[in-house]
Amino acid sequence: MAAKDDPIIIKKYANRRLYNTGTSTYVTLEDLAEMVKKGEEFTVQDAKTGDDITHPVLTQIIFELENKDGQNMLPIPFLRQLIAFYGDQMQMIVPSFLEQSMIAFSKEQERFREQMKGAIGKSPLDVMKMATPMKALEEQTRRNMEMFQNAMRLFTPFPPTAPATAAPPAEPARKEAPEKPDDLQQLKDQIAAMQRKLDTMS
Image 1 (cartoon, one colour):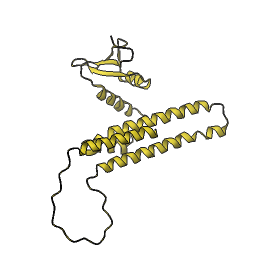
Image 2 (tube, helix red, strand yellow):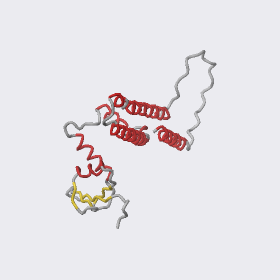
Image 3 (cartoon, one colour):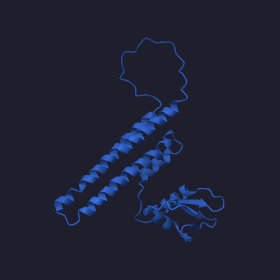
Image 4 (cartoon, one colour):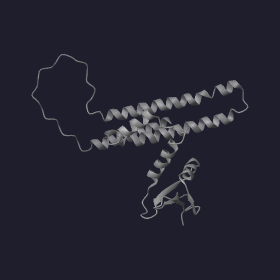
């Protein structure tokens, strides 16, 4: 028997039906979307193989929501940029950046909602002060973009060129030393450091 805090298991059958083992009922993608909004943790498994297929199912939910009139949240430029990152050297950084950005956004959103609740019945002057959380959210977004741009610079194959000066005497061509095998680890460490900085700022 699953522990109380364990994620609910949703089984997906070959006929595409979804079965909630926690409630012993069949559910739809809309039901799973509501579970996400309520903060209920669940894992989707292929009923035949037992494989974890949570990622494709959540992606399918987003696809369904994006196709509903008036519910588009992902702007076309964002979708184009996201598609362009697949297979690119930046792909390994994008998931962490998006995750940290959404965590920071959620925290600011929750704080904004709490302040809105507290503003009910207050004077217009107090309500006008509610713009402050939005400014904080904009500032957080700006900082996130700066962090992302810094991360992108780590992947720039060539350093910025210095201003042109008098050319030094020509030297014989030298063979470039091969990259050290621990370069990737150093890059991962730098990414982790940026994530910690994001956590601190949020």
